[in-house]
Amino acid sequence: MTRLAQTAGLTDVQQEILSTVRDFVDKEIIPVATELEHRDEYPQQIVDGLKELGLFGLMIPEEYGGLGESLLTYALCVEEIARGWMSVSGIINTHFIVAYMLKQHGTQEQKDYFLPKMALGEIRGAFSMSEPGLGSDVSAITSKAVKDGDEYVLTGQKMWLTNGGTSSLVAVLVKSDEGHPEGTAPHKSMTTFLVEKEPGFGEVRPGLTIPGKIDKMGYKGVDTTELIMDGLRIPANRVLGGVTGRGFYQMMDGVEVGRVNVAARGCGVAQRAFELGVSYAQQRHTFGKPIAQHQAIQFKLADMATKVEAAHAMMVNAARKKDSGERNDLEAGMAKYLASEYCKEVVEDAFRIHGGYGFSKEYEIERLYREAPMLLIGEGTAEIQKMIIGRRLLEEYRLQG
Image (cartoon, rainbow, N blue to C red; front, side, top):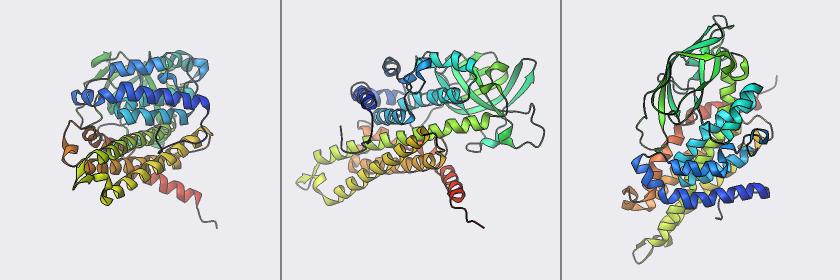
């Protein structure tokens, strides 16, 4: 247990879960992460271990076979896992966003059918909003669903699906004009469909193709894919919540949980970078003493540790706010923005402390240096977070009269 990034007020159960996860990360993830990452290999053994720990059911209610834990517990577990290897946290995050959306917005039949299997990790979730031409502008979605009897026919191309290949359930956001006349605001004519599929690549069900993995700079191991729908037929009982036109709100609710998760990932990666930096600084000697004794390096370590601590505190605050049932888009946006920016800065300082060795694939910091940038864009760019934060502040501090 380190001095930094402690969380006050945890229950015995929360502490036990975190201790188990930290132990798993130290023994099963950190020793193999860099080798698997360099091979871009899916960490099947690690995923099987997470299943055994019950982590796929962490936030799923007990009545559906999950552990019924809070967003805070989940975020702290994600922080630990990202400390080991950020890609692994991505494997469980998209699963949890879909499980959370089902829990909050699904029909009783949808919850009864999906959640018990999701808690066991038998059904694994992915979610899909983005498209090749729109990025953060969700209102510009062009994929569409057309009603045909008791079914909907889905057509369009989606982009940046984490777990696109390995998942067996994808929550897909599309436009659906049924019951929404021409001129309806874009966000009121979107629907989330629960699309079941076979894991794998190619045509995974009639009308649905997952072309293959996108080759990325970092965030390897986990598969990131496109999704192409061409006459994909989905029964009406697979509209999330049973009513069309609610998709945008459902997805944004899920993304708030996702933003806390990305903040937690930033915290975890920054913690690992600090651990590597402070350790290396005590081993490497220049001018007759460890570089940790040079004031220039101590200043770097001071900056790094302060950023780790601040990001962790904001992430915990955002999770607790959501758990209390309050609106947390302001806090989640702030936490995601700060944690991802600080993560990049802490990783770069650790990289500088390593000197030339930081550039070598033999050292773990090289992997972290390629992973950190994903957090700057995932679940909404820094610019999107600042727009959300700015608008919410103006709501809260509106001048009267």
